Amino acid sequence: MPNEILLISIKPKYAEQIFNGEKTVELRRVKTRLTTGDLVLVYVTSPKQVLMGYFKVEKVILVENLQNNLQQFWQEVKDSACLEYTEFKNYYQGASAGVGIFINSFCLFNSLIELQTLKQKFPNFHPPQSYHYLNSEKTNIVEAIAGCKLL
Image (tube, rainbow, N blue to C red):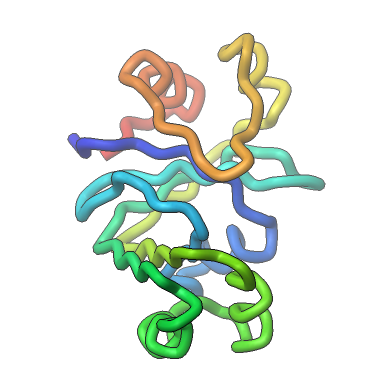
């Protein structure tokens, strides 16, 4: 069982690229506690608004003092991120750190879990702006409604 299970919000375009196997690194502006073997649940933002599946973390790279190391970070992620340098640069404009969460494997749920269902099972559920760690109780609920055991 992973040490951490993280719920993140991802735009539909990028979520589809992850679950098609094209995008093998998820980029973030905020540090996490994720390490190799942890799981990341993917909530797809509007207009889809569904919990789509999860991926297993291969490794995480953190680049601090990002504005001085932006080119180095780009070199490490450019072949895996499914975006152009201009998009990358715009995303990290003003950020102090860059995080690359490399994907080892992924699992697309057989049935996508809609926002309405999530709110019924988790009365105070709000899609995370950045990310949210799940405790074992919430993980058990996700497993029950997804109909599968998280690795």
